[in-house]
Image (tube, rainbow, N blue to C red):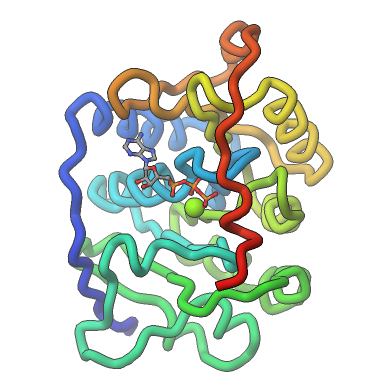
Length: 245
Ligand SMILES: Nc1ncnc2c1ncn2[C@@H]1O[C@H](COP(=O)(O)OP(=O)(O)OP(=O)(O)O)[C@@H](O)[C@H]1O
Ligand SMILES: [Mg+2]
């Protein structure tokens, strides 16, 4: 039995966005083969990985498909703070980095929620260099275990263009959803991300064009080529990953 979580922030999404995410969820259930472990990734910071991962998980759980959202951005977790997550029993949270470091058992880290089919594996303590943790057997074992227990395992990860974490995680996933920020992500960065996924042997399930128009998203599936002909402006905050805090 996992511990119950309280989630304070439950934003109501605009209908169009809700509908777009629902389409993504439905698409995800039609992927060829047994696609369970899905990494939500992007080339650069701030493209909406965590946002899409969280809302995709919510929709899957609301559709009564047993789902777990894993905060595998061990460098800069936002989930707990952004959504106001705490334990119903008032005790401190433990998360993925605690588990991978061998400090906690999985039962001490996984949280159940108000949604009967929606569990969370947060990350509470950031680590400067998670490579060793992600390369260890504890992580690959965890991926196997979660894949056996849940219909969907959604993993939120750091940007592909800055760190190799996504390569390692992607190698253990059944596929990736690539988030691209409309009008911002460079064509070259997208090409690099796609090549990186290929090298990691992680099939690309589709591309999400985030923030088209007023905060909405667009699912591009495989028909993405024509959207990236333009040269886009730069505007990332990569430094937030490297600032001393
Ligand atoms: N489609 C959207 N509609 C409204 N807000 C969005 C949308 N996509 C992202 N945001 C908001 O933009 C901000 C950055 O998004 P998010 O944290 O998901 O990016 P990220 O790719 O996970 O960044 P990082 O690389 O740092 O992990 C957040 O405040 C998020 O809530
Ligand atoms: Mg994020």
